Length: 457
Ligand code: ASP
Ligand code: MG
Image 1 (cartoon, rainbow, N blue to C red):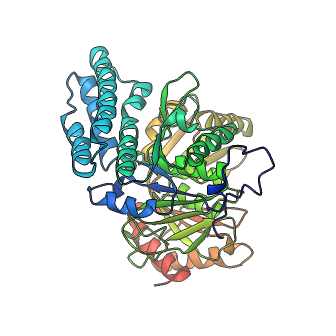
Image 2 (cartoon, protein in one colour):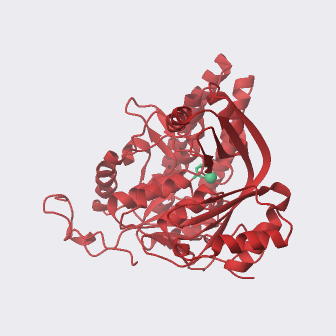
């Protein structure tokens, strides 16, 4: 699908009174630049190239900054912290890349660092970190990066304006660390972002960060700046490009399957499955705003030239092998009524299992990611279940499998030929996902034979 002009002609009259003539012919695009893309000051030159397309920019924190902020938060909780390294990193970027606007940008950075210091002092004093405080701390990576990018672009003669959280319309739920932006916010996001475009400036939006109605800083979850970008694209009905340090979405994890190749095109529902089943290339929640909307997503390399992957609503015949390295089976005993209560609980705690293996009158088995089991053990304390770990999951994903017979048989045969036992199988009725549960030590062989058979050697 081609990127679509934001087309004021297509808008009902009156919805964009402020729209001025000079922007009418421009096809809007959202460009999200990931944290790993901002590793050296040279990377800012690539940003300058991208700015020629007059996109709406969304930025992640400079490389490694979110982790460093969390680390200092933990240190503050233990009684001692230091902001020297983080301060130096941001100052150095300003020093080497900004000219005239240096002082003004430094003043903004200084005031953000003062605010961060107040937060860390509070944590230090109380010796207690809450999810709410952790969000105020980890949000600084993105809050710091946007004034720098704004200053940098302005210095190069490209009018730009930084927008963070509320200024961009990113009012969220109060689920600290995993906040959501309700659909009703989309018109506000559109209005705020377009107001900057109408001024003839490039919006430079802080990814990952939002604010509750009550004014508290929230974050959307690690990797969440992808979601900031897709929300803007959904609000505007335009294309979104996620620039990453990989060439695109791969047909398997290349560390596990060396023959994995770039997937050129993928349907958005298929992509959602891929994100749910282990792929870290795109933030899972970022796909939701694009489902059933005319807003194609392109994942591509920041430094390379490859066209990357296009994810949109069209049907594609490419398949992907997704792998979950550490999976566990929760085995519940109880009646169907019991099972209903369990599902209600999952909805309440917003945990979406990898698969329901079996639901029968007397028992049910549910597959979950092993790293989440500790939390689940606490949250599901009122239920009786056992946990079996040591599994992996391999999922073959792609809606083009629908209606084709014999796929599961081929998977079973391939694995049997290698002496690999299948401990569980899950096939979605939509036909877009067939997954097997196997012992962890068989993951590499299983992923490779399935990939070779259905995608290529
Ligand atoms: N900076 C945040 C993180 O590292 C958000 C992002 O990168 O998308 O998780
Ligand atoms: Mg990051």
